[in-house]
Image (cartoon, rainbow, N blue to C red; front, side, top):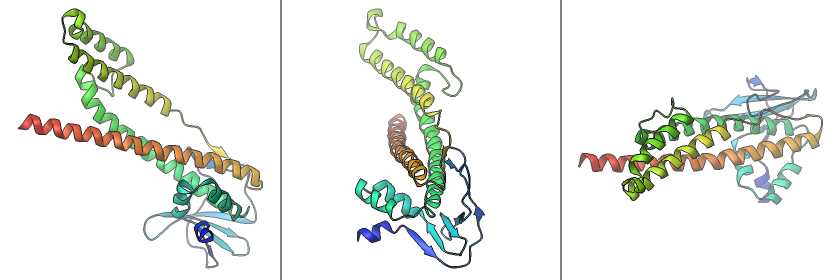
Length: 242
């Protein structure tokens, strides 16, 4: 069973399917300083719309890495991962790295889109409360709007403590949101490896897998936040209309 778990690549002797040769992956993915002359990597689109990476040797021997490799790496324990990597030869590793790099780029792009959706929902709740446009306002605009409402709602100024605390919570959420945007806007640049060095490729694998795990975890958190906001807005709309 463990052997079956590790076989997330297919060996193939058929004629090379049409596809775009892939030596590197741009964006936050990966790039190679030089190419091997004994293998070539090809990115293929499968019949179900998914993608795979084919590694072909000069004698026609082929291996194919599919999405099951990604899911295995996200779910396996350290021992299984070590055994999985040991079963992959130096010739095959560039294919796995190309697939991981492509997946990091794709999931990173989806994460940014999901964050935009969440931010728009959060803007409706928080920015709108302060009379601000979340996409246009600056940090100074936020601070100015907060101080203005504070003078009106602060208990020491005769305001209601509960309303003041609710306003403060919205302000803190906006600050946290803007801080998250600044932290996540950087990115780590390209991860490079030497396809002729197993140590270099294993190091690149570790970094790519770390990125993939982090992006996948953050995506779940952002999607959960967005769904909570949709639920609150539906409840608010229902109460307003009733």
